[in-house]
Length: 452
Image 1 (cartoon, one colour):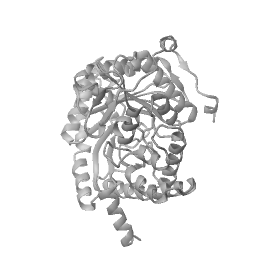
Image 2: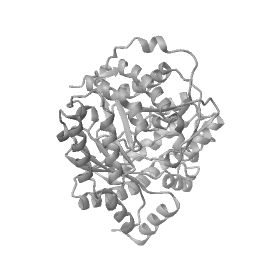
Image 3: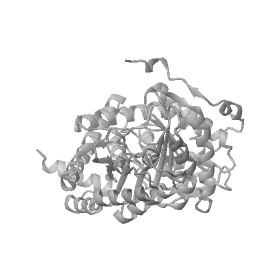
Image 4: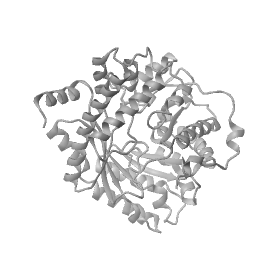
């Protein structure tokens, strides 16, 4: 039973501590849209998305108004497009991306995810065609997001796909050069990608999912930061307990919104993703939470330990609040989208190597990091390989979303605006990884993948 104190506390969390529902995402299966005729397939895709998601935005706005809970984004995720487009007799997959973009605009959503391929063990012709089309697809669309899964704990790492993705990221940056390489902000490379992720750019509707589903992503770094201010100097077990209790309350709100959206849209409720997703706004930063634990600046020694505590406590609090926790669920560290991360990167305290260490214990991985525009494709591939190895060995989802900034060098800044924020261009190691990447083949799955 809610009492007056609980209600007033929730109102304060929303009004002053940046608590929000980051996204309501409707997942839609497009397997029924497969057709040998690519034009007909695109028509089916557009028709099905606009029919299923017709009331998604309105429903989110109604819930936001009636409950007083901010819902920042309304999004759609679809079946990995390589699986759908592969049934069509065509080598040009860009029209499929444009059909997705047209449907997203019609529905009024912020983004649509699923221009994706799953190639952890090998590439079909359809997978390769889709991957090679990504630069043009992201340059010619506005709302489409793309992802490629190159590794898993069960399959190992597809190094041919890793090498290709380094070149694709470079080509995407060049294709969107007029926007500081903005296309790369809508492209993520995964290891152990999940099928029910509501967050962009990596959302897609997995083949194990229902015909349609509602997934909700909550957020609340500002709420956690505020809660920790009340336990200054206390032992870490007190810190962990405080984060757990806060995550419980945040997740409860997400569960409420998810169930209400599910009922109103007559769509099954999937999961609540309880990730702490920061924004560039002051007071809504994961980095500032770590600093509240006693670090002078995020990135200094102790940062990885602090992040491990935060991530674990968020999960423990969240799973007590909902029996349907899924997606990525933890703490995100996207540099350009976190005011504290941006500040630490500019100081030089936070570097690529430290971020990589932090990804061992947080959700996802190297996210929204700007690197010099002349960074070789092989270096980008090697960064992807390192991150995929962390995910593969640790049985967790990891990802890379790098932004090679055309014409920019270390110390420059790229501006993307909105939730994407701005990012200082960070240095990469100048020593070559070209021979390593040129080997190709597959890095085998680790021994502990043999659990059957």
